[in-house]
Length: 571
Image (tube, rainbow, N blue to C red; front, side, top):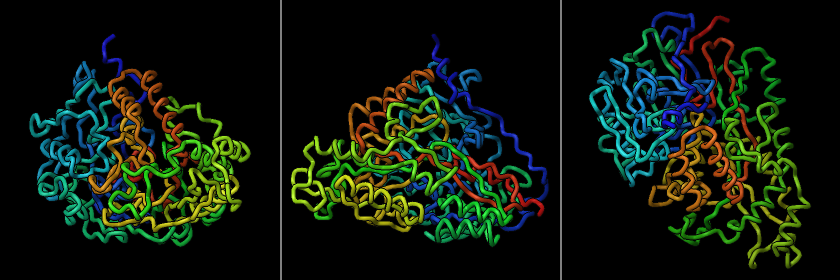
């Protein structure tokens, strides 16, 4: 059988031609200002220096990639003229290379041409071992990126790549300008403040002012390749506050046009929507609210070795403890209290697309406190002094449980703390301002990458529909550390050579069914380690003013993926 059959799976077949027609033709900037509120304020506009959604999505107004995923998960050509396939000659018959052709005449916002050399530079930037690139997994298996000519980019893989649409595809892997970032390679990456706060891009908007953890001002890119777009002349991108205030600003006061990530009580949200000023929209993709169980020791007494893999956690590396913590949780109640129709119980870190979703862990859907207590008793992890807290090897099971400041998350924390107390585990709760928690500042002790706690909770997902790059997040090499300037995607410090071998195997496996079997095995290995405890398959819940048109919310890419097509509709 020829290897071309590898590209016949569902994920790779999700390719479509762009077709946007808002019916509102006119001059660029005709609709004045667009007001967006992301209550988690961005700390940088360089998505390669932060894995936070707020950074990736705000940057997507400026930085673009070769292909993007729409609201249906379909892969669209963006900076590329078309999606390469085996059939059109863009993907090699043996799947060891993919060749992209840039659209003609694409300009950077400074008026210089986008060329293949910028793509080559982006690969070099993210794969520099001293740079700590937060999106390195998108370049897994890439052996070489070459500029065949000014418009032709050839990406060569070190083995057949059945799903070659990862490097420079999606909102998390955009092309950056070589001229602007030339002096920002390796360890210099986080020091390039001007570039990181004001990247030159090819997107519909340019940065005019950036205040970290506060506000961003954008203006229409006069060199944008599509006539009459964007419809808005300026964008105010406000950060800070909380989810409830953000929802009110769109649905009640009308102060803002779009509010993101409305993680608030669903009945409160419905009441706000009833005022008639705006509409709540939800998109399900791969977002999972999860607990990360630290496999390293966050004790500050360890100094520079704190929260590194060299110092294992004194008791959370025992998977029986993690299993008991998971069994004690009533996920259905968490959905009811905090998410409503915007949430579903999940026992997997990868809940979708359906072909990849495992059913091996479904027992977590039912709370079992009695079973959790019995498991710990059988393991000899018992309360020896009668204070209500179990000990392992003389160490009390006391955990610091952190997350971002958010009413729903604090409600979740309170419930989980109570359930854990019923199995002899004491939890100290901590919440951190989201702009800091999800920021990429290597000097801050409070980022989710540093993980100076025992348990942390947040949501993550991935762009596109193929999970290869996402599942590679848990390679041993993806563990954040001082050597990577605390960048990396393996937050809980999970490390298993057998898992790494599956990452490599997936990258070389053709056919959707065979790939799905490997992905499920990887998911189940993570679940069996109890270094991640999935809670809720979350829909992306946002709201927009009824006067805003062109919205096609996506959970497969940036929510703002088609902002070039937004416009002001009539009242």
